Length: 130
Image: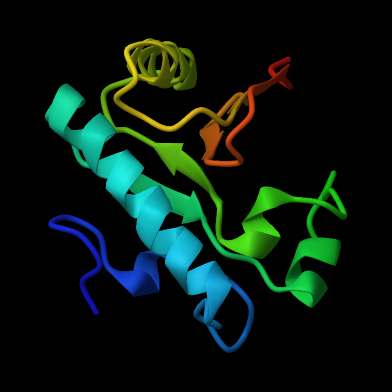
């Protein structure tokens, strides 16, 4: 099911054995997240790969370094890759779009192979690059 011009609900489904899709408020959050990622896609002109979107509690607990209050549990977060851009370039671009009021304020996490973005509504920043 398409939820925005470039994103489908399946892209945000949990990577558990059932590929569980978000429902209820988590589904509404995923739709809002996708709208924000559309802004990033339009700005960069590049496709966005969703490595991880919505997560069930059980699946989240199996993830290395998981947080019990992860925004992924609420459908508010995505770990993304943009081909042709480093995770740092993606993070800087998101920061600029948030500052310009074009993307929702939230979390931006820097990792070696991907960038985390979430729409929690308050600023949160971290850097787990080695």
